[in-house]
Image (tube, rainbow, N blue to C red; front, side):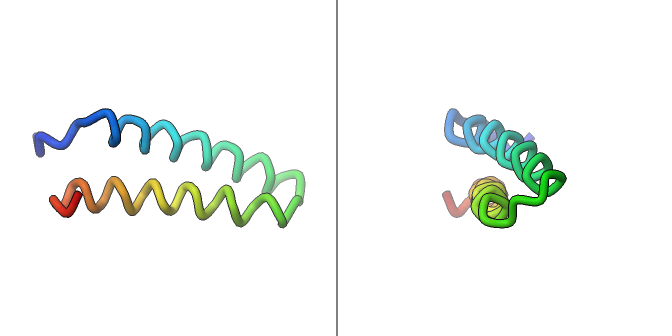
Length: 57
């Protein structure tokens, strides 16, 4: 639809899924020092995908 499907966006989507999965597990087990990096990784992937959709990347 937006012609933005690339290897980079596929990798970002896969990393986002993995980061959110890890974030959930770390949140449930209560390890705060791993939760922040997992969240920030997922957030960075979201920003990359958003910038790609908007045409900045």
